[in-house]
Image 1 (cartoon, rainbow, N blue to C red):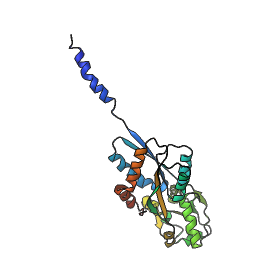
Image 2 (cartoon, helix red, strand yellow):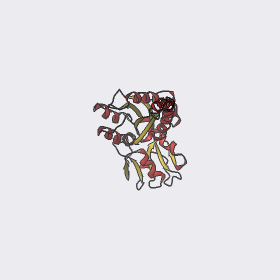
Image 3 (cartoon, helix red, strand yellow):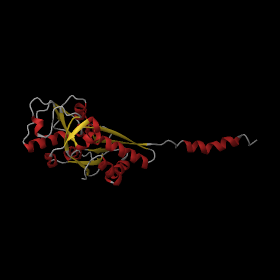
Image 4 (cartoon, rainbow, N blue to C red):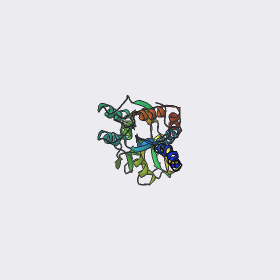
Length: 247
């Protein structure tokens, strides 16, 4: 009489265990557009070392991203392209820990691969009739462009001011613009699609990138781990490979 019950009893432990399978955790990272390629690789490395963790990346201009976080966007980590934008997060008590610097970057002139305008220096960007594209002043790359030009006494007259370096890069690579100002790392990541022109004045304006976990995160421990990962050997190695400097 007891035999018919055995199959059911044998299945019960399996069913109970199966209920825990497939559990996953999501970490949402908001990062400056100039970090796109490097953070995609860092996220893959992080996921490889953290079973069941999915890192969702949201890229954009740092100023736009911090505005979204201030508006309640569910970010767990914020990585900015400059300290000023991160300060906005801190001042609104939205950083769960003190920001830490993890990389540096400098500007480079980007031109279409055949450089039809013959750009060779920062001074060339002031030529009348040049279709120059830069980041908007409120965006870190735009603030850096203004500072570099101001220090050198070069009056820039851009035809367009974009909200991220990727937007500037897209207009130059498509031939819509004769030149733009982006980061060294952006030119490297674009490969043969564009040409890059370094200029000595860029060394005077260095952007330092800070990162911090966001207050109110659903995954505070995981957010802290990701910050440590970016600051650790793996994260720093990836960033160096994309041309970022040490903080």
